[in-house]
Amino acid sequence: MTTTNDDPVLDLSGAVKGSWHRFLDLYEPLRPELYRYCRHLTRSPWDADDLAQDTLARAFVTLGTIEGGAPTSPRAWLFRIASNLWIDRVRRQRELASEADAASTTHDPRAQREAAGTLLSQLSPQERAAVVLKDVFDLTLEEIAEALSTTVGAVKAALHGGRSRLADPTLHERARPLPPREVIDAFVDAFNAHDLDRVAALLMERSTVEVDHVCTQYGRAAAREGVLTGMMFGSRRLAAADVEGGIDPRFIQGARPTPPRVEARAHRGEWLLVHWYDHDDGEAVRAFTRLELDGDRIARVRNYFYTPEVLEEIARELDVPFRLNGHRYW
Image (tube, rainbow, N blue to C red; front, top):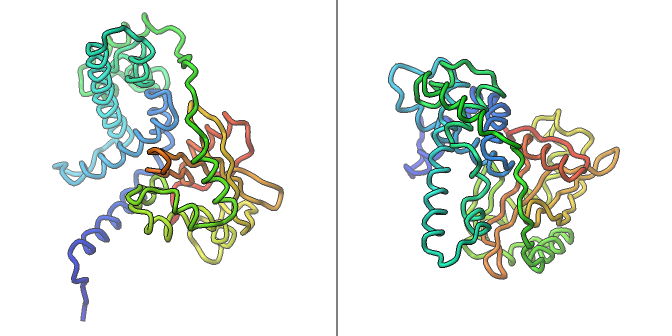
C-alpha cells in the first residue's frame, strides 16, 4: 500500500526539489562557463554568481513550458537566458539612475554611478554581450544572434560599434566608506566562541539566512537550527564525508573536524567574513559570508560555500590559501 503525505504543499515541495536536482545533474556542468560569461557582463563576482543562479532558475522554470523537447544546444540556451536577464537588469538600473538624477537638484555623478551599480559601462548591453560572446567564447555570428534574440546583421553592427568604443574595460571604482563594524565584530566574536545563541540573537526575527545555491531559511529560529549550525559545526561532517556523506569525499582534502574560525576583511566596499578551516597541512579558506544589516541587527546572511567560481576568485583577490567544495551537498 502506498502512503502519501497529507500536506499537498510538502508533496509539491519534494517533487520540485527532486526535479531541480535532476535538472542540475544535466545543466550544472555548464555552470563554470556560465559564471565566466556572467562575470564578463557584470564585472562583479557577487553579481555574476547571482546572475548565473537566476539564469539556471529561469531555465528550470522555462524548461517545463517548451514545446517540442529540450533545447538542442544547452550552452547557447543558457547564454541566451543570461543575456536577456542581464539586459533587462541594465535597463531597469538605467531607468532608476535617470529618475534619481532627474529628481536631484544637483548633478552628482557619484550618486548616479552608485545607483546604477557596476552594470553601467561605455557599451550598450547588446554591444557588450556581443563582444563577450564573440571575443571570449568564440561563438559564431549565428549563435550570438540566437543568444541575443536578434539577427546576424544586428550582431555585426553591435560588434562594430562595441569594438570601436571599447576602451579600458577595468572599472576604477570610487573608494566608499565601509559600514560600521560593531555588528560585524559581534558576529565574529560570537561565531568564534561557538555560541549559537549569541549569533542568532544578532539576527532580525524575520531574517533570511542562506547557503548560496543550496538552501534558504527564514526566521531566526529556523536559521539557528539549520544554516547557522552548519556554518559553525559543519566541518565535523566535512571531515567524515567519506563515511557520513554530505559532500563528495574528494573535497575533504585533509579537512579536520575543528570548527572553523571567521575574520572580517574589507573587500569591495563591504566587510566580508572569511571562514578558515583547519586541515592536516594548515588552515585554508573554504567559505565566505556576507551580512546585510538593518540598524544594529542582521537582516540577511549569505554563505558562499558551494560556489567554487566565486570562492576561488575572491580568495585570489585576498591572496589567501583556499580549498573548493564543489557545487552541491548531495
